[in-house]
Image (cartoon, rainbow, N blue to C red; front, side, top):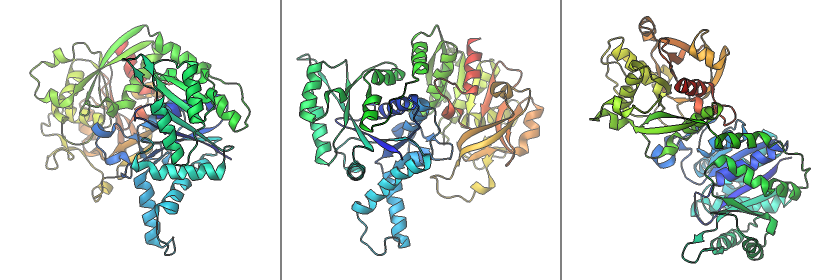
Length: 532
């Protein structure tokens, strides 16, 4: 039977609940236990799929096609486990499910209320994760901050779980802030005291505190918190500010938080296999070389909009003991730039064009792709990046000047990129993309085949438009190679240009499967090309 670990946040947002939850899961997995992770988000959107990346950051996609919060990317990268639809629950999903049941008559005419109907639905999602995953531990992060009106139903559901299951099956980790007052040179505990009190007022007793602080807190601070918060001194953990997020699990490990959890559950404290993570941290802190690559995107105001891409680039760099510096370039600025592209890209060894939606900044991305192709600069296109690479090639090599996607110009004559027939009748935007894992067969002798070193791959998608196969013969006759295809639907998945240093683009999102200890093959190939 699964044990449940809940991670809540207090004082302010952005304390690192997601990294804390990921670290706990990593440490428990390192001791030989099976772990599963969840994120509860209090916003009313059913999922982040239709949210602006500049407001919310990237949309992470699970293998089963669930559009989720970017924290799930952290989870998968830390614990190296594939998560699924039970891992990301929003208020919107909860309310939608309850209203659907009410319309069906499932509640037999009862007045539908926050308690018990909404809270029961939340509890069901938590228990479902334990049942379907068969995990020893389900680690659940509650988004937002204790006291937020949006998250009250989630906190009430957790109170009920703590009451129903008891301390033998539940463990509550509360993340808080201990600020440093520069005027007096003191660390202040009052915000943490108040946050724990707010949590207790809602019926939940925290089992451990993870305190974000600028440096390790003295014993006197821990004793004070233990007294005022009714938490054992050894259960008060420092989350010291670090430059490298991969150091955080080791910091928590040194303070034995995983042992604290196991002791409360009366479970064996198995030997920890944490050396591989220590080796990773050592590698990240002793990189011998540097390389700069340009990321040409349309949401670069918020770097989190491309979080998995930037992490995947770093992962590939670790393999080659190379620090990958990202030069963030706004694709819209390239459209009307007075500077030459030679000047803009003079210090970069590779250009990556990631995914996105809508027509803004598209021509700037196409300019960057043309520059990479004509100047033999290593190139990697992701999702929209592949579509634009084909459009650029069709315009400038195949001499189809109006080549375009019907996403940007529905009336263009040469619809190089178009909707699939089964997509054309769709009205709603949310959850109607081609999502999740699809197979791809690789053509032997190609760069893609060399990178993966296998015949078939399984990759995650998030898009609606596809390459128009009517143009296959034309682009191949001009030198572009289709190196990956989905056999079931005959859809193009990977293209490349052989007579180039490194020019490859894919319709899927390889960044979602990259791991710090195991870079994705396409990012590996790309970074290798930039440093050769």
